[in-house]
Each structure stands twice: as C-alpha cells, then as structure tokens.
Image 1 (cartoon, rainbow, N blue to C red):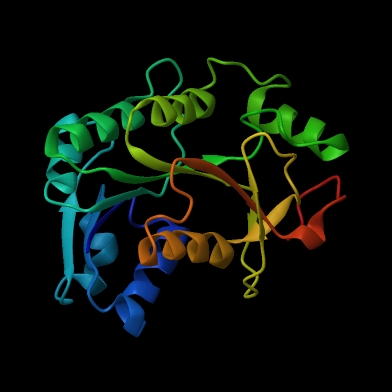
Image 2 (cartoon, one colour):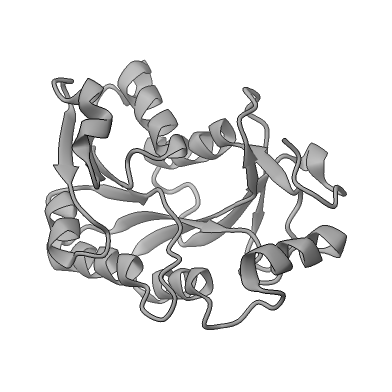
Length: 221
C-alpha cells in the first residue's frame, strides 16, 4: 500500500509514521510525507519506504504531487480555512483527478453539536465562538468529504493529551460524543486500524475519546 500523509510533521502524524516504519504488520506500506519544510523530517530522508515532499495544503499543485499514485491519503491537520476550505477542496480534487479513493480526514469534536453538557458549551465557546454554524470551516470540510463520493473517514478528535495509554471509545455521526479528551497515541491507533483494514470506518464519521473522561467539564491532560 502507498499512503500519503499530509501535514506529516504533526504529532499524531509522527506517531503514525513511527509505527508504520517499525511494526511488522505495516512492512509493505510505503509513505509519501508532505510538509512545508522537509528538513523537519530530515531523519527520515534516507529511510526506505519514505518519500518526502515539500508543499503547502493551500497549493493545488503541491497536493497533487503528494497524492499522485497513492492508495490512501491521511490529512493530519484540521481544515480551519474559513470561507474557502482550500485544503479539503485541494485534497478531494487531487484524489479524484488521480483516481485515489480512500481518505482519512482530521476534524474536531462538536461539528454536529454532538457534545453534551457543560463541556459541550465550553467546547462550542472555544472552537465555534459559542454556536456551531454550517459555514464553519471544520463543518464544511466534513460535509465536502461526505458529499465527495470518495471512500472517506472523518476523525473527530477530542482535546488531546500525551498520555501513553491507548484507550478510546468510538461514536458515530448521530451519536452523542462520549468523553472529552484522549491521547494522541489513541488517535494514531485509529488511523492505523484504517491503514491495516481500509474498510474500518468506511464512509463514516468517527468520534474518538477516552470514555473515562466522560463527565468532565474541561479537557483532561
């Protein structure tokens, strides 16, 4: 399998890359890693199975270069491009142009106003200015993916921490979000489940969080 990771220097992206390069179950996965400055991943420059591509998600030509010839695309950053959603448009357009179908798209909790209680209000205030709107960039990004015809998975991330524990529950669109926080290692684990089995999360929106944090009114670090 050939996997493109966009925004490949992010913390979750790095966890995914490390496991792919070091776990036997992923020994046949080749990585194309796009980031603004490839020097940040200079340690992988001469690594077998790794191709580094310098590029900007807002530049269609850069995105096309990274996606060409891939089997799956993981965008490891949330699209916050209000009013334009250039990253999401560029990814979808490049995938359709090159016949790449499987997309994993990072997003955030609350895009369906699915987070309950005091924490839900706090999250709306922090992420959406108090009210979730159909025009908010993360909301639009998810809608574009769902309407694209691609085999997409939206990952709705909780408030993240760096705990070593991999522990999470998954909810789906239409479900109440469970938990408030989760580890970056847990999010990486979900991505890797999709890499190992592309049918996992197919054409779905997955809410991910540590269920032990349910009921907190603030993120758990």
